[in-house]
Length: 469
Image (tube, rainbow, N blue to C red; front, side):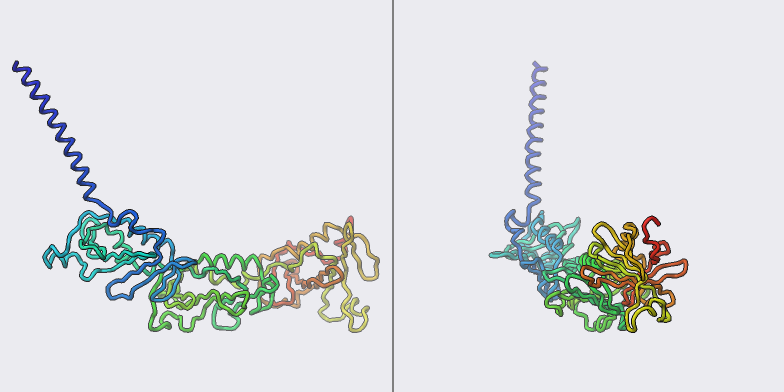
């Protein structure tokens, strides 16, 4: 009997322990759920409808961001494009705030109430949308990554995680702006002006006409359409490193009252409308490569790093079309080569009538199934198709590995090729210079040399085009 009683007591005790642990577990789980709760209800802030954010910090002018048809912008203290990712982070972090404790400030003594840091708050953040808004006052930070906050319209102050404090109190809301130097708009770019310095020779201007880009100054020559397109794409990707200060009292401190360097982009129509502007000032510090800048005359100074500066100001030669001409090979019906006579008197010139153009050393002319070559005093005869095609490729497609802004050295000039289209229309004139046993240079009498290596080897002798040579 005694053994049976002990057994019954043991079973009863075990059941009691199991029941106690079961109740304790449920209580703890319930306590955890009540300890952590969302500051806002699930649908209290409609994330996709928020279209206005206002941040007011102690002794600072309020900063306001609004959503427009084209995206988020900073509306005040001045207009500036906003960074959509940064704005979305502000909205998401605000909506996801978690609270673990709530206190009615009216129920605690003045010293404890002041410890909340809400009179006045360090910052107030307002999110607004059509038909509604929520404002959060952000107070003092506490321990373990917590901070005090108060939702305007509620009696209690809440202990929340400090994620919003990190953005709105400790962070710099200027960094919520877009750092892009140029944002392409609906207008096509029809002109580019780069100023590398104050001297007229340091101004580079490009313009597009009839679908083609040309360099207008400091020389007049063809521009490389691919290079211009690449420049505009690089410019659209370029970003400032940071925002330095807003509305400075003296822009000259940053070298921006009369900047030496600048970029201007003009619309194709109307042609004088500026659709992109960046000014570049002095270096950010002695010996530094970073410079101060200003975007589109906005009231803020930015810092430009080496990557942005390289995108803004490539070498002027970058824009030059490095080909001898931009003629399409298939459009060429004939090619002539005229040797250069530095004295102005040659056998060809003497044979020509007074005032007539020099007689070409040879003429290549396209036929239905190949090419013919004609030399002075001789009848046309078949020419090497392979050599004729190679010549056209050299004059129309070969891209010079180097470009120099200088006139052709007359002492090295050997002649010029002229390309003709249907009906005898002149398509291009390409002048040739050659160092003895050295480099070749091509120009179109435009002050720009396209320089090719020794192996370029232009054939300027009629014999080179003879069949079965």
